[in-house]
Image 1 (cartoon, each protein chain N blue to C red):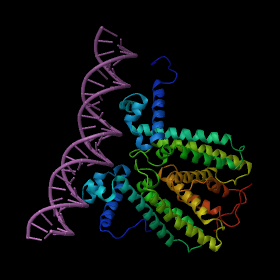
Image 2: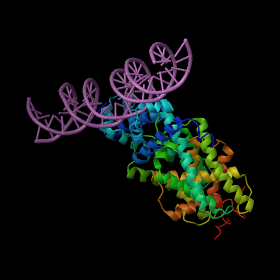
Image 3: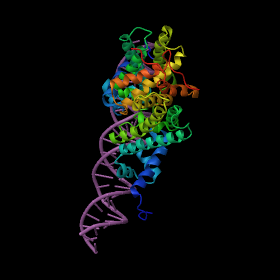
Length: 207
Length: 207
DNA sequence: CGGTCAGGTATAACAGTGTTATGACGGCGT
DNA sequence: ACGCCGTCATAACACTGTTATACCTGACCG
């Protein structure tokens, strides 16, 4: 089982196994249940395995951080495939809805990514940048499509995407924290708010 | 207010000391530095002190959670006292700005409140409700003042406050997570967005 | 005044954590 | 074949939250 297929590096396969085992433990028992011994046992090895593959718990958390952004991007593309065609502002709302679904579906992973759920861990700058670029890329693209169709005002697409991300993130975060009622209708109106502010013919800030 | 601060018992004075010592450690060394032994040493006692006063680390975290909402409310009222008179939509933006200032000023406490920074801890339902009512109360009040002046559209004030809170929380959270550029101008435009969507004469969602 | 009881306090022990040192094993190049 | 390097598992270390135990203080009552 060791050395027949070299196409993917065997270490990467092992890393993937460990990451998925860790993600399973994280989803099941929360960040408190993510211990090196349990991860090692779940992946069929010893705690040293995590050290040789990731350099410690911080490295494993970094891999889970990146994995979270990958899963979020997958969920977003899947949600966009069931949304109106490009150029419809509802696609921006669909991105926000996918964001909330991701947070509610795996709140522990969401907390690891955005809430310092692993005490000593802060993601590496490159990993953070990659995650930010991934989610911002999808959002900027859908916003720019709407601007090209004239369904959204031609403001800086990145800035519009920023505020849409912030809104979706705030809704999802407060939802997970149990501070917002989990009402589906109220959720859509909240997610619609930032794109409503960039609709053609909207109000401008009073000077 | 009654649920957040109890006056009578002399034990509460000790509780206050311990809470402030813990808040100091939290602000200085982050959630990872908040250990019972360090808290006890900083408050001049043994670890049992935390158990007799709070019943354990979860109880201490709950007290810190409530303390965080009190400090946030104080910062908000202070920010509102330097804002335009009631009825000006800029007051809502000022609330969001105070929210971001709070998050950046004590990111560890912010993470404890909203990000599961203490592994096993989730706030008690009453404490959570008290904190939510405290921040929502201020926000609903300032929004309702604007609606009374006609500077904001007469929608459900609580719903408007919800989306303003979510936006401010998302901005603050992504800022603390290092995922948004810390640009002051961009911050104000983002915080203005949800109130912009409720200005009189604004656009409505296309059916 | 003396005895008794309750409750807070400190000490020490326990299970569990991340991390690191210590050897043992196996594959590889020279 | 030999030495070497990396990987693995085991065990130990320092630390965590929690709990049991003993002590000591202070109030209450005979």
